[in-house]
Amino acid sequence: MTTASLPAGSRPARRFFRRRPPRSLLIGGGMILFWIALAVVGPLVWTADPTALNLGDSLLSPSFAHPFGTDNLGRDVLLRIVNGASVDLQIGLFTVLPALTIGSLVGALAGYYGSFADMAVMRLVDIVVAFPFFVLVIAIIAVLGPGLLNMYIAVGLVGWVSYARVVRAEMMVAKQMDYARAARVLGFSDARILLRHLMPNVIVQALIYSTSDFILGILLGSSLGFLGLGAQPPTPEWGVMIAEGYSFLARAPWISALPGLVIVALAAAFSLFGDGLADYLRPEIDR
Amino acid sequence: MGAFLLRRTALLVPVVIGITLAVFLLIRLIPGDPARVLLGIHATPDALAALHKSMGLDRSLAAQYFIFLKALIRGQLGYSYFFSEGVSDLVLARIAPTLFLIGYATALTVLIAFPSAILAALRPNSIWDQAVRFASIFGIGLPGYWLGVVLVYTFAIAIPILPVAGYGETIGEHFTFLLLPSLTIAVSLVPLVLRALRASVMETLRAGYVDTARAKGLAWHRVMGRHVVRNALMPAVTVLALNIGYLIGGTVIIENVFAIPGLGGLMILSIGTRDYPTIQAVTLVFAILVVLVNLATDLIYVVLDPRLRAVIR
Image (cartoon, rainbow over all chains, first blue to last red; front, side):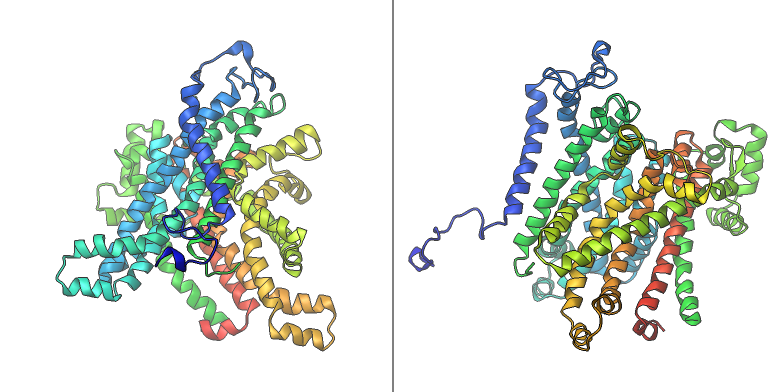
């Protein structure tokens, strides 16, 4: 197609977006970039130690020197929030990645091979989804012991089922498609058909789901931090900070209030981004 | 209806077996001797030997599972050495606040979500509709436990008008003590229900039978009640049912925020004290609760939509 045939006003090719992205995608994306930048750059610029005690300054209300106030141990709340950004973003990533990887692989294998493998996987899925998600995660952490690493393991062990279901359903359709049959006729190995031909097509749905799962992972991780089962003090994780401030709620409400507001803001960013992404990828669905 | 109930219950058997199997294996994931794990620091050689024998630890895993099942059927969930009490009694004593909380939160969710969704659907793109959509985007990312902390500050510290810890003694007190906890859970559920309900009310409003009902001169509230809302209910019930695990999981953390003596509070306490028999039992009870609620949901479907009776049978 030549430039001349394009309708007036539209710029020639080589644009980053094929279509005009929805505003929510751009705003949400911008907000997410801000938080990532804060997590990376913040601790480099503001090099104070977020865990250092300063008992002389305990429970100071917000002021010019401490915009978000200080906590019971005299630690600057803003400093801890800035340092917590990387912890909570990491929680989002490591609660989603193992579940996404295990779930997609298991789901793809079950959908591709069918019969016994499929039946075994689906019965296992039935058992896992019979439990309330949060309760099963807590029960596994109870067995493994509290802490971030065990939390990631527990969430992975429970969270893979949603991805397995999505990918399995996609795989059952995809393996019947002409391109998959063609690959089989050409005598390619199962591994090659699965990984090179089918996987790139069936993974899209799981990836879309994972963007909304990311914020759920952060909420889950911070809840577990609040309960003392996830990140451990003195880590400046936002849920841990809310729990630490809870005992001082009457005297110093800012310790619990502000980390929560930050979680809400981050969640809103992902919510907007996810909505915009869904709109952008499925423009035919009118709202 | 009886036959449907029977068939639906029979379908639960494999799920319940799976649940008990998972809970049974949970304790055996802990490295070391399961009897020592269950006894914790109270493990005297005598107690250890006795538990070894009663759990059948010298026999195969399958035999151990059957011993576990047999005890379960007799209602024996083990013995908590931390509380010096049978776990069944422990759980029974704490199940009421949790059930009350779940029921109360569901009721509040319905009371908030339904009128809002209907108003939003009746006037698309009005300020109210925009507010509802805004709430459903931002409400999803609201951490429930943090909202609980904010409500405690607002209604117990800043304006001290509500109790915020415990369960109360009388029915009336249960309602006031659990108001804020239930509201906290409802606020995180409302956005989910709202979205589904708004869409389904809008769709129902366009249906031919609604025009018919209006044309034959039915009062507005009858059209809405009998024709629109009843038909729009199904998707909302589905969304509520899909999130029942989320709701029940939510009670665990909310009970800890508001110091409610329920199963969730018991579970977190037991993790701190490594009271594994109790953790095992509470996990099991929560899973069975989800199974029962799902069963109840299926019954509600049938009540709401008589056509399903034929299909399900």
